[in-house]
Image (cartoon, rainbow, N blue to C red):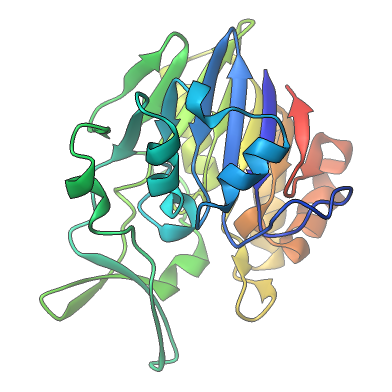
Length: 281
């Protein structure tokens, strides 16, 4: 399985021509199939894809991890370039998604509301576990055995002028089975990375997890610090090793500070990804 990071927060270490933005988009190629997991915050992922020799028109299925702009902001560009692939996503939140802080910062965090009406036949809502392509599985209704990330406290849903904390029931996790093992894709893991791994592990009892890929939502990007305590990040690292997860590839909302804490426990079993990162699992 080959994974190409089409876009991430940080620029490429080796190619200054690649665009970076706050968001995440991954292209996955395995067993002759191509999948797009999230689209970043804009159409920039598609420009990077062309530069990286990834043909967006050849993607057989797209998956949106959750209804936030930094993962679905490039959907319109994807639909313009790809005329056939369905976009699979969880049930929409019951209102508009916002980020809020200190009573004065308020930022719309949801998807373009005109997108689905403009492309009504291209979206498939995931309400139950489903196999969208051979050995590609999506799971809504994630388990809640562990606390959700503390950074969620700044994320809300607004409806009829009433504000509630986002419960992230619109988030899904993707698992790909290859060679008798699983790769787990998390997006932002607002539901908690351990809960996502638990959900997949429960569905495939006894099947090894060769990789976890995506963000863990440990960062408070506005303040460049961790949303979680150091002890909670350490606990997460230890439990990921106990599953066991063979390798972890993380970036976006995990944050540089949390990554260092994770790496202090996981050592060479965790890798930091950024725009242009290409790896095989």
